[in-house]
Image 1 (cartoon, one colour):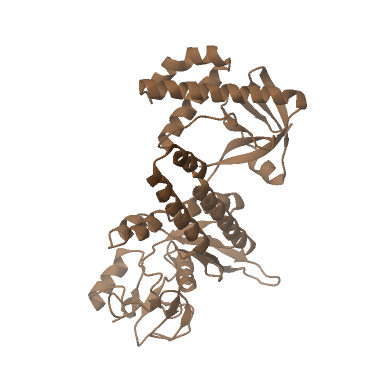
Image 2 (spheres, helix red, strand yellow):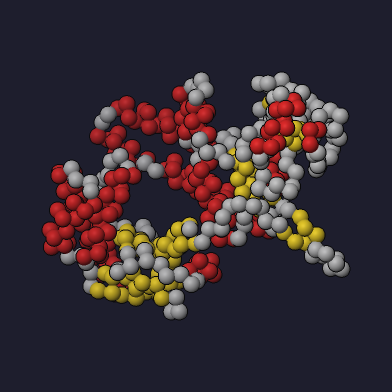
Length: 429
């Protein structure tokens, strides 16, 4: 199950602007009072804090009972997410099933304000209508922008298809008796120099986000060293800018990836980079390199692709990352000497068949092949053919037994064959 937020503009009559603003101000005042009590009593447990603040906050602000409960949850949530919680502003209010209702047939929402329940007409397009169709949301957030417009972010749950086997797509050309079965997969190679590179040749440079991260890191270091009141204000003003830019960038990349896959009826294949930071940080690295590695937001991009692909009906599969950058996408050989590679920075030149290509695109091509084969045992995977079996330029290989050394075996049987026949797997002998 994937939960996403659908942003919808609401039509608010002029006479209700003041009522919404009054409710937003009351909610912000409640949050600030709750925060003061939590700091003074050093109480960050939701239930205990509720007993301490519920009655005095209701009497002081006049907001509804469920608004107080949501204010407590917001204070606790912000305290856990941020190192230091500052004053709350009257820009949004959390709503639950008792203070919010969505009416699909009328395309309206009911929101409980301090003056009571009011209904507002939604001003949305087909994208929002499709996401809200058949939904019964029980949570939302009412927001006011700096331009004075009102939006409501409605939380909806989407059924997530299991990311397992790559789907078999049918091509039924006119006149064909039997529809030809084929598999289409776009491989995506993730990295820091290029954020994403596809097997189609598309690439998104990471130079801009890297420069942004480096710049903000220097600014933060300089400002923090001053230790003045004005420096702390500057840090608060700069807070979140780098994160928002990274999120904007990943949203754009994920949107384009899903659109390309949907237009070509393809699945998307990614490397499973779980625990990649731990393995990279075990190597000798400078402080700057460790910071850049730890700021690498590949998982955020993966999550954005997941939910966008789920909405668009595009399958997503994950493959083992081992040797995808070192393997030739044409003849599927790797360098025969352990510790060496045919890859050099952005270029890849195979020493076996002479194939030259961009290193990231070469890796993406390998990921695309793995996306087809890794979860389909009947499809041959990437294999390093021995000298007597290699034919340069072939795009598909069908291995038979001991003549083929699988770089990405899907079962222990292939590993056993590799060890018994050649001694060391994953390398040309």
